[in-house]
Length: 111
Length: 113
Image (cartoon, chains in turn purple, yellow):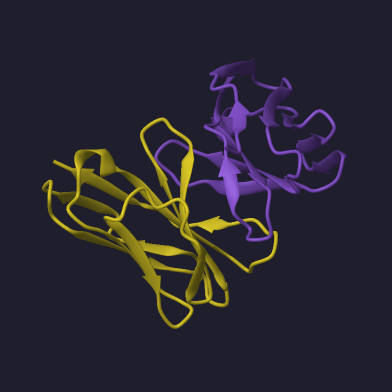
């Protein structure tokens, strides 16, 4: 069973703060890691992906990957109320581009 | 098309009836995926297509579920003899293949009463 674990939250942060979202995965052979944002009642949208150990930055978002510890995280700097959503971690472990999704962490950014 | 299109957006059906859900992927996307999401839950993988073939059907929950893809484009997910536990949002996604991210459609909300 390939598992992707996320704290369901809600994670509440004040506007302007850094939000830190974490994800752990069970399959050490996992190769690629994606973060999706899902607003209530909407479908997920891709916001970040990372393949290699270390950090990857894109605007206010930074993805961090540590394969030895089998965790991936997403940092959101200068959090805005519009960032309030559920963030889904997705992990790929094979060549078929099939992703296993965590159940998501709900983020609330308070004005 | 510009995005992944799913129809219908909502479907209410009686227990025991068959339903068909349609997905029209982004033009040129060779890979197509079906997931379902129950209320407050994560995404559950159902089936994956590369072109018209389905190398991975491992997620289909029972033999009541089937899917096909024709012309390397439109896919139909069929649920026979629907049960109440089939109620969920069924999401279709497509990608260029390889290890790339998905683009999701807006989903079909299925309610079995």
